[in-house]
Image (cartoon, rainbow, N blue to C red; front, top):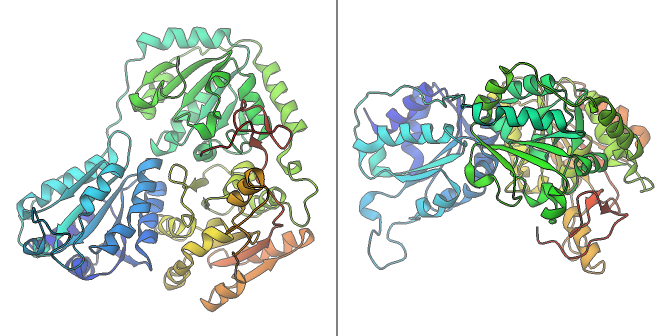
Length: 573
C-alpha cells in the first residue's frame, strides 16, 4: 500500500483519534491519506507551534501519544518549541515532518541547501526528543513508526520526530501492522529498602511527601493516592504536580517552590523526612541553597531516571523505578507505621496555613486580587475537566489558588516555560475528551502569542472557557526588572500594550466580557458558565502593581520569601 496510506492506518490502530497540523507542500500526501481514510480527525491549526502544543495537550489527558504534522523548513522548525515542551514535561508525542524529495537533499555536498525549504530537522530535534529519524528507505517505515510510538511511551515518556521525504511518502510499503505500542508496568523488588523506609517513617516527627508531575506523566495518580492515604503523611506538590491530590483532600498542604504557598514552603522547611516522588528537585522547587534545603532532613528520592537522583540535592536515598509499579508494590505492604506525632504535625501545618493565607499575600493592591478571583473561578468551574495554564504571573497565582477537584487536571508548561502554551494545549485536550469544558488561564502576554487559535475553537465549536488575567504588562519580567533594574521596565510596560480581548473574541464570533471590579466577579463568572458547551472569553483587569508573591528570596532558604526577606543575589532562572 502507499506509504502515506500506511501511516494513516497505523495511527488509527495506535488509538490516535485526531492529528494536529498546518498544511504544507511536503505533507500533502499524508493529509490526503488521512482525509480519504476518515478514521482519524484532522485538526487544522493556524501555526505549527500551536499544533505541537495541541498534540502535547491531547497526550496529557489521554495518555495516547499526541500527533502533529508540519511541512519542511519553517513548518518543521516552528514545531520545536512544542516538541521541547513534551520532552521537558515528559509527555508522549510523535511529530511527523515532510522533507523534500531524496534527490533534492544536499547530502554531503558543501552547500547550505539544495531543495527549496530543505532543512535538517532531525539534527535540530535530536537534543529534545527521545529519538529523531529520517526515513530514507520506504521498507524501513513500518519499523520506524513502531519504534517511534514505543519510544514515546516507554520509560520516561516523551516526544519522537519522524522526517519523511515526499517521494518516500508516495512509495509502496508492505501492509502488515504491528500491535499497538504500550508501556509495560513493572513492579520492582522493594525488599532491599522497604524495611529502612518503614523504619525512617516510624522515627520521623515531621514527615512530608513531595509529589511532582512525574506521578501524572507516569499515569500513577490513583496508585499514589491509595498509598499516601495508607500512610496519612501530609502532601506538598510542585507546580507540575498540583493536580495529583484534590484541593479538599485532608492530606493536601499546598504548592511549594519559588512562588509556592508560604505555609507549604515553611512546612517543607520544617520537615525531618521528605519522600520525593516524580519531582526533579530543580532550583524552582528547592531554591538555590541546596545545603539549607537538605539540612536536618532524611530525603528519599523515587524516580524512573537514575540521573535525576542525587543530582542537585546530594545524599538522597535512591529508589529507581517507574512510579506506577513502585506504588503498586508499596500499596501491597501492610502495616505502614507513622510516628505518633503525626496529628500534632498536621495541626502545626494547619496553623501555618491559617497564619499565611494566599489571599493576603497581595493585600492592599488596588482592584481585583488575582488569588481571590481564582478561588472564585474554581467554585464556578466544578463542571470543567480541568485547567490549562499559561506561563507568567498568572501561572503562579493559579498554582497557589486554583482549587482542583477530584478528577480535574491542572496542566502548564513547566520545564520549557513557554508563553502561548495554554490556548492550543487546551484545544488538544478538548479533542481527547470531546464535549468536556476546559478552562484556560492566561496572561495578556501569553494569550497574544497564539491568539490566532481562537479560530480553531470557533471552527470546531469547542467548550473552552478562556480567562485572561490582564495587567497590561509582561508581569513576571516586570517584577524582575523592579527588583534588579531600579524600576526600568523596558518592553514589559514601556513599549508594550494589549488589545480589548473581549472585542477580539467578538471578532472571531466568541462571546466575551470584561471584569473590572471585585463586586462584579460572581456576575461575570455566571456569564462564563452560562452555556457550558460553548466557548467564552473573560478578561479580568488586574493592577500592574500586582506581583507574584510570595517568592523565595534568591540565595536564601525556601522558608525565607519576599517581600519580608530580600534576595542576596540576582537569580539566573
